[in-house]
Length: 585
Image (cartoon, rainbow, N blue to C red; front, side, top):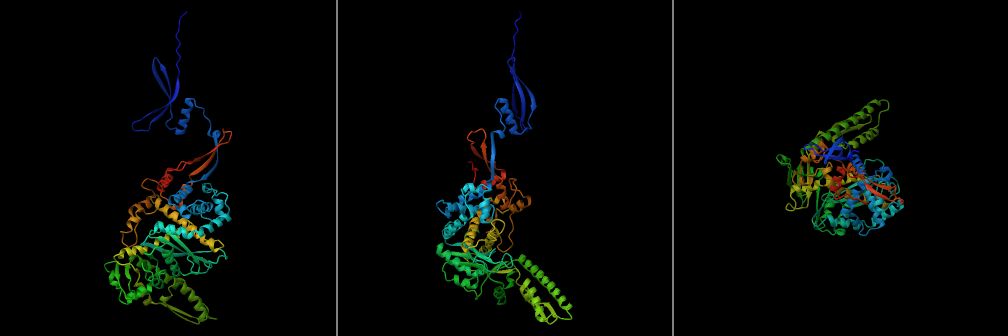
């Protein structure tokens, strides 16, 4: 019997990763065995184009690991948008706004913080708020999921009782002796008839026949909101100034501040009142009639602007004040064009009425009937002073008052800033820049009344709830202001604006920086990320979800939370907001 040797060759299948010098590594499915003391291998397939998770699954299978479909492991029971909630609540906590509202956590504070956050995420009525915060993780994060609308109204009353304390803490954080304070007034229309604040007045929203509510916002020099006051709709802007002075000196305890307000706010009467407070300075502007008086009195020579666009003048009519006269040719062109358009529009309407008058032969229009029609036209475009109109029974004639037009055109592009501050404390160029900072308060009104926070329309029935609602909107803008500042690199904002503002020409129209222009043209950041508006970046963050998963194999049905991995733009936003590492629970 012949002895035979039997060789057993064990073949092992495995995945091999072969590096390439200038190319991605090759991923190969191979089998290997030992033969005559040497290792042999053979490539079965090149799987370099497989997704990584599929490669990992095959590797686990070749190792002998048991594979189970993920659908058999666990189920996703709930998926809620979380990223925008994470960003807003994280910013509130980082700013310490929750502590400013109340140093001690309470049910009322959680409800107020939730209303502030919801104002940024999805502005809506208070009843809708109690519904919609369940569609995100907001209700879970603050444990307010069981709150109803009546509890929200109680929390608003609690907030209103703390408004002075909160505003004082904001002032302590952002104002100091010698600070510059910006103040302006706006209004919003009111839906309903029950609130005593709703009155008929100057409707800035253009809603005819609707009562309005007036509110004034005080900010620091950068436009960061500090305080808000609410007034009946028939309140004149200048009459609100006294309250701001009392708040600055009494509540905030500041004896030396500079108040900046527009010419409709800081009227001569209000400026005379401000002079009674030592240490209280101001910056405002002259109205057109006052500027014409300076020109006709010889105190403002138009030749001043032959070689420069800014210069200081004096006038005995404004003792103890500095007057900084400015000329902007772009504003001159704009005003000239607007006046021409309004004159042409008025003449077109007058021509229409004239044809009606000429057609009425049997029973001509009376003088009074024609006067009513002409009055409506003249008042519509506010250029009646530039027309000479002759009205009689069945007669309508008009012509332009060329002298009136010439006198007005002479001042096109000219404006005069007035201030109590000395030249040593505030040079003329800086005075003009500081007055133009009022545009930052206008930005606050745009955010409060626009798509961001939707302060309007107001439906609340009581005066206290209206005041609390507007205060919540102001606090929400406080959060938005800081978020916009932090997120500037991925927004359309000009990141170099604060740096360039003190150096640029105070009179000439502002120009965007080269980087801002490039960002607007390319719609990409320097890192190749898409540039967003504040509204769209919040929506983008909202696509990062928190999932509640349940393990199927667990007899107790244990659950766990799983967060969507942040996209590059989401990670960048959270990084800019100083909220990385991303929260994981």
